[in-house]
Amino acid sequence: MISEKMIRLAGNSSAIRAMFEEGNRLAALYGRENVYDFSLGNPNFPAPPSVKQAALDILQNTDPVYLHGYMSNAGYPEAREAIAASLNRRFGTSFSAANVIMTVGAAGSLNIVLKTLLNPGDEVIAIAPYFVEYGNYVNNYDGVLKVVRAREDFQIDPEAVAAAVTEKTKAVIINTPNNPTGVIYSAETLRALGEALERKQEEFGTSIWVISDEPYRELAYDGAEVPWVTGIIRNSIVCYSWSKSLSLPGERIGYAVVPAECDESELILTALAIANRVSGCVNAPSLFQLVAARCADETTDLSGYDTNRRLLYDGLTDAGFECVFPQGAFYIWMKTPEEDDRAFAERAKKYNILVVPGASFAWPGYVRLAYCVARQTIERSMPGFRKLAQEYGRNGK
Image 1 (tube, rainbow, N blue to C red):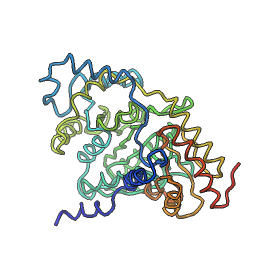
Image 2 (cartoon, one colour):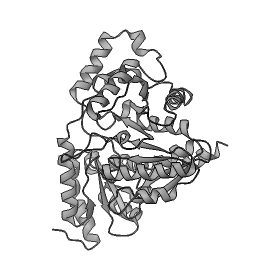
Image 3 (cartoon, rainbow, N blue to C red):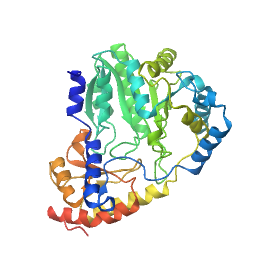
Image 4 (tube, helix red, strand yellow):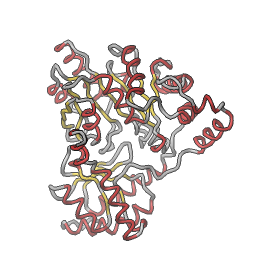
């Protein structure tokens, strides 16, 4: 018999991945072009040309023993230095290579941070709606996930977070721009959260870290700014990935950055490097560490995402659905016209439309749609959405 923990996970597989596999099944039946899969945040936009050029140049001009060999578990020093310098230029920080750990994407970063911080039974607070895998990541290290609902505008409710803190609380995970809502947490919200947590740390005599999951940082629209968390909250650690900003999800490259101002920052940084090794990753992928170093200031062209954002939002609202207009990321958060969001998602399949129920993000009554798809997917899906809306008596505009 395999482990009981994995039996539970196998029986409760991610709804996002399940929808993705359903898309493959429907595509085999009806043709890929006739399936409108909004389930997975898998960018349909190519990486900037500079990424390909950097990879080719590194492959052609770097000693292969150095390029393909082991390095420090924390990553290549020049990659960490380049990323620290990029953060310093953009956010007025004073990081050095010593503050940065190269990781296997943001998921790898979150896991090594949680592995470093948690003892069995320690509590981690997540802000609903939240990315479904946070619960699994916390469970990996025998932590306890506690869920606190956001406000109705989907900003964090700092006082509700503070009320959920106990002497066992070790961390609060935040995600901005947010998956699934597209909301950017404001500087005012983050400041209030930091102040509330400082009070609780003083009350309990403990350290509580804010872990900021930021793979969508560069995907912000209409001039919106994503506040730099470590400049606002003292005990904060940023986990980042180039999966979305450079359309490189399969390359699994990211970092964790720990400011010197954090409690036990040196010990945390040492432990993070060891966590890379003992988790089995050993180190982040070597080629793309060096690519990321060269492309640290690059971002993808947002115009395609912005076009899709407006096209999908306008199409859904014209059909009669109610949606949150996203400030960032590449998701539309749509209110379902019936209370059972899973039933709504199932009904959408009649029109070969795949969406993820909000219950998977601990916020029933909504569905998430990823608009990082081809524009034609959105355009071709609209007749189906209009028919779906009409089933609920919504005729739209």
